[in-house]
Length: 420
Image (cartoon, rainbow, N blue to C red; front, side, top):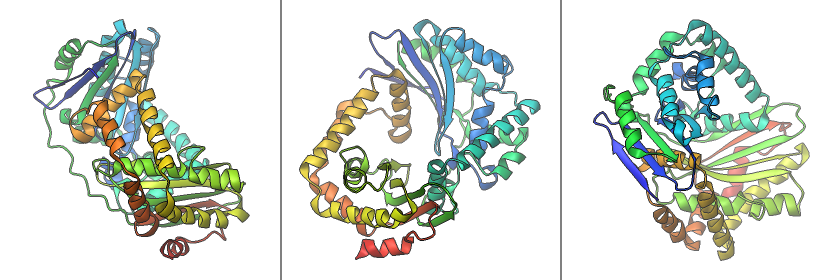
């Protein structure tokens, strides 16, 4: 790796990695302010702000923003998570200064035109409606709400419809003033990039910003609970979350290997048992997710109403069985898949830029790939079995059910099965 890091006096950070042989680059600004940073009355505003960033600045109209990047063959986009909002572009080498100028412009100079706010409000309400009509999307919002009740992590990223209908320009400006501070911004670029040129342009664009006090986040606590929404759908949707480590916890790689072996691939335990042997479902998977101070292992499946009870009970049985008989070859396969996914992903400059931003968010530095691989390789069979035992029996859990789920087992019943 050839990562270079520079921090401006106000805390704004620049990370770049030159990738020899590439003629293009990915460049973006990751703002450490997402849905988690919202107060309850602001729920959805981080995502609303992401949409508004492309609706015009003091220098460019909404069309001019799109044309500036697309005229040179590039693309520009953004996304919002619970802890980060990202604005990024992909362009050819000669257009990197243009891309940074456009991304900086939408962050520093938004106009929040009243007409554009109304237009985008309608777009976001349509997005909310689409999510509500997509069972395997909305069920994860309900699962999150039960895992972290009365906490920002438990609220949807898109926001409640009534909140979105009420946002106005002062609300957007207030969130920018509170959260879009230089020490919470990371400029990351990978591919055909010149670090010194990036720093010079960043200094000219962002050095006048004053360092703020930063955010004080409400500590997360996984509490758990059950959400059951009965609706006459074709499938019954099942999502189970069990508390896991945060992304600074040394056990995070253990959790990831465990989730991969449990349900991360076609060869995984859940896929083989539920789909291949029993034919109970088309889709089933497990994954390990993490935040700055909490995390969860999540299992999702969609099945027929009359098969849901069996699927839920077998899922719990598989969790318990993994603690006793997870095999060395399963761990090695999951480990290989993790490392291959990491290394293959880093052939993309977009993924490299995102990784640098994420590592700086988590660790304040960008670990070498060798360091990460060493941590993955250090996970033992005993580590995974111990983690599986905790996951199977004692860790707090949340359950979300959607569709024809009247007769599905309750969380209490599944908890009793876990403890048996």
